[in-house]
Image (tube, rainbow, N blue to C red; front, side):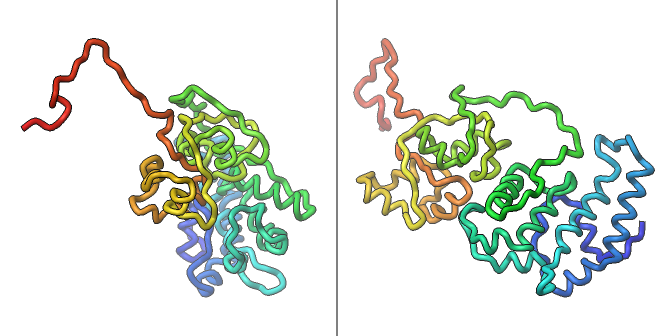
Length: 294
């Protein structure tokens, strides 16, 4: 089907967050009204002609639906200035999480409309973005829908994931990887890695989720200006303690602050599950048998 659209619109068939386009000229070319109209006509014609059908387990509307959704998310413009909303949002300050956003930005036309537009089975809307909409409603006096649309592609019921500790925790409202890590004495990064299907984000965790808890350890909380050496000096830890007990840290601990933004700020300062000393009955080591022979 020939569409009166810029070639870049074809990439909208790939499911991903619709970020700022590289240039104003490209935005103008992509956001032509006739393109949206043609995508809508294509979507509805396929929807009407193929009701009840699936192709390899996918609805026939998947490609036109994602392309149209991509256009709708990318082509939102601020009424007052006429600027593309992705460009406007790029000018906002960086925030640790949505709860920390200035109300001026949180409740702005572009921020609200951008996230509202994502709520479609053809988009990226998930538990994280539902939480963003809940915060918008609570702080901006709005009542926008927040529920997650039913998935287009049916997925089989997941098998029970293996949990090495067989210890679980059920989340409550307001939980984050860091708050759970502090409360349960576990590394927030290990918690996230133990629950990859649930903890895609460490903030805005929905209540009622059953999490596998990793092995416990003695923990420390990392502040926004902390360094590994500073934490170790302040707490009288041996040099290298944090790197030794948190495998995601690089050898120089240069990725500490960037890492905690994604994985929470609770780190182990002792081995998870403690140190194990084994005694083997009847085993006697002869002098020199534990070293390197000559």
